[in-house]
Length: 165
Image 1 (tube, rainbow, N blue to C red):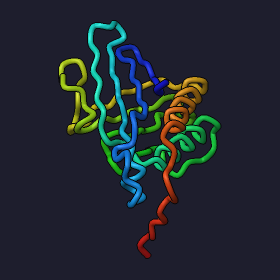
Image 2 (image 1 turned 60 degrees about the horizontal axis):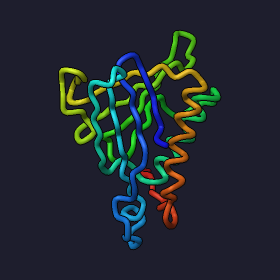
Image 3 (image 1 turned 120 degrees about the vertical axis):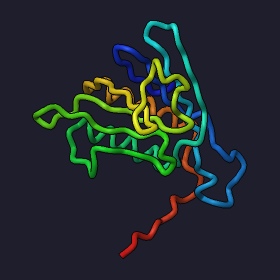
């Protein structure tokens, strides 16, 4: 089951559709590229759009789940933004005046943008959708992403990337 969020206009689903390179185990990055399936539908059911494309590495999606869980439990996070190597899907935290997490903004770029600008406005080539995420919604979203990832586990070791000094 894909991870889902809903606002007053749209239902959004994000899940893993498979590995981008099903049989490639030579390169750790190629072996772990995942295809995201994004579905956006009007809550009134009159409009539905779906796309599948490269979205993230297995360990990045795992890190995203950990980030969502930290947000949900009030643990400190490095940033209020989470993006992937493929920047076409990303998340921003929405906080209230007290600093509590009250929502997520899901940003869709390039291949993950819906084709219509009338129903889904964009700014600077980014569609940003805001969702209210009380703890149970944020927890369920993280759970569904983790379940989706469980079907496509990390293959091999996560490469150590040296940071510039």
